[in-house]
Length: 470
Ligand code: ACO
Image (cartoon, rainbow, N blue to C red; front, side, top):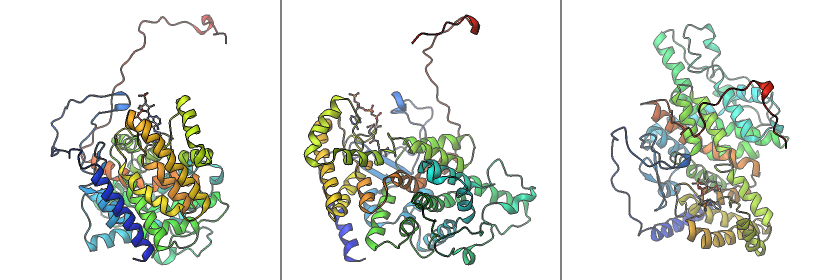
């Protein structure tokens, strides 16, 4: 660890110390039940607020204490000590990996990063004209290729064409490192059962999860480059998940500090309870569609400005405010117009979001390097103070994860339109983990709506219906 990365760890340690001090008076949660006796009773508000949809041991969010837990481990400890590879393994398998397990997992991610066939297919589309999240969803669908739960006809001669035999190449700025790494897989055996298991694993199993976790960064980085008028870059097999992602986006190997900061970002965004995009993924999975469709649904839900799309809107808002001296006037007007302040508020957190606690000092650190980003940080800092002293007091509205993440990315030279795709690159770990967990005791999601419409209306032929005049 060099001096710069040590400094980053120190900043997080201080933020964690402060968080623990400030929330020490909040009661810790009691022991959770190991099993629920279904059906259960709970009070449900609009937007399914308060509804308990399933049991999970993947993650826990405590809104009043500002706690975020992944499989029993505090996000604060994971941010200081762990890596995205380890955290995604933890989410998927419920425990930290041993050295050997982590190596095998990392090796598989490295292998699955390389997606020439998916890239070639994606590049046949006008990615430069598409919304990056739409392109990411499309790329995810191409990652699926021919294998799905529905496609599993083990007698199908086409089986040899399934994903994995993906060593074709596309134009790249660096030499594709496909050849030595491309392994024709699976090692197809004629044994029917093995083949069936393999296909299922590719469609709804852990291999598919690994492919998605490894593949989304490659697709997102390619989208970023194509939109800049550049060619995608082949993944670098000796770089970590975070470093390789930055490398594939920017074309240069990141510094240790940049790698660490991206890694922390990916850790912080990896899972977050039954948020809208996770739920969307789970709903799709519950129909026994396949995991690629599920993740596509997650990407679609994350895109919205009330969810992952807020990080881009935050930056636009800060840029629009333009100067720290204009914050109060801008805020007054926004309140008068009853506008929502992007990057604030949360369905669960009624205290400061622990992820924002970590990202704020990182943003400050990175933004101090040039006058333009320093000014943006000052605007953000001032706006936070104004919002917390008003909405914070009145409605317990505090900064959420999206408030500072954009400033961090911007200071790292990442373009605004990539902020939400980066969120997806991380959250795919939570989506896949929760889908896999839910599928173990799957029951199709099927809530009800309260019908408040009319009954007994008499059908009128179209010729008798009056046009409403405007
Ligand atoms: N700015 C101003 N007022 C707000 C904000 C905000 N950002 N968030 C909530 N409020 C107010 C609402 O106007 C409402 O006030 P009222 O009771 O007087 O009508 C009250 O707080 C409750 O707000 P809801 O929108 O009902 O809260 P909900 O739990 O449904 O929504 C949400 C949570 C969507 C995050 C909301 O706070 C919001 O829109 N925030 C801005 C967008 C944002 O930052 N999203 C990212 C969330 S984090 C994530 O998804 C990764």
